[in-house]
Image (tube, rainbow, N blue to C red; front, side):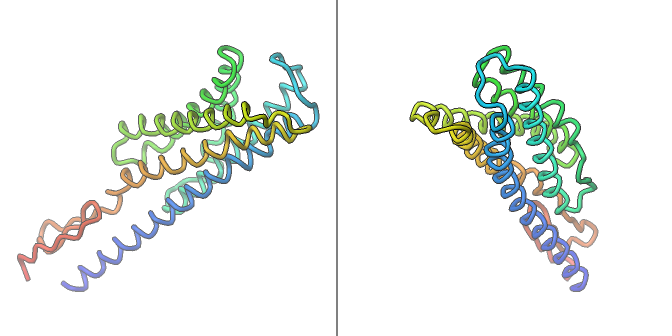
Amino acid sequence: MAYRINKHLKTFIMSNLKQTAFLKTWVANNSLVYPAALGILHPLISHGFLGDHGVQLTRPQFVMHQLAIMLFAALLSVAQNRSLRSLNLSVKQWDGTAYMIVLIPLAFWTGYYTLYIPFDILFMMLAIGGVNAFRLRPYMNQPKKWMWQSMLTYFLGALAGIGVGFTAFYLGVMQLPGVLHDMALWLAISIPAGLVTALVSKRFLKAQLADVTRLQENETGIYQLQHGVVNNAAKAI
């Protein structure tokens, strides 16, 4: 009997270690991809070759922006999938990437060409939240709740990025020479956006995954592992 209890306790502990590792990699990957891909690569690709632009982009400028956003979407998808695989979920490296590279640029340009800045960023972040809401829904204990949690997460991330971005703009980052002013502005947007989405989603994911390792022994009533709590009934001991 003690062997059975120890066996399940070991499973419970290992599952929680996996969850801890997942949450750490999820936060790290999301926190790094945003500034690296959106804050550095995006301005280098979009503006480094063709320079600044007005409200209306030329065809080459549009193409370079599109490539940069698609690259960000692909890198973000791969980074998130790597985190999910630490939970031993059947997620492949490129799962969901097609949705990301189609929907994220589409949302970005919809915001840009309808309501203009900063709605390009807001729509883009909400698109990421929407993709993750549906992609991760099967793994959540409360799928319907996760849907609005994911959207709220990326809405808050967008607000953080837009707020800091506008602050940097009015503090004069656009006075920096060459592509540096674009890089400084996008870093001001992407760093807080990445951090907020990583930390808020971590909180939601931790609660949503709490029941994944739930183990119950109702027949003997000796133990119950539920919501991370070990309860010994000890009726049969």
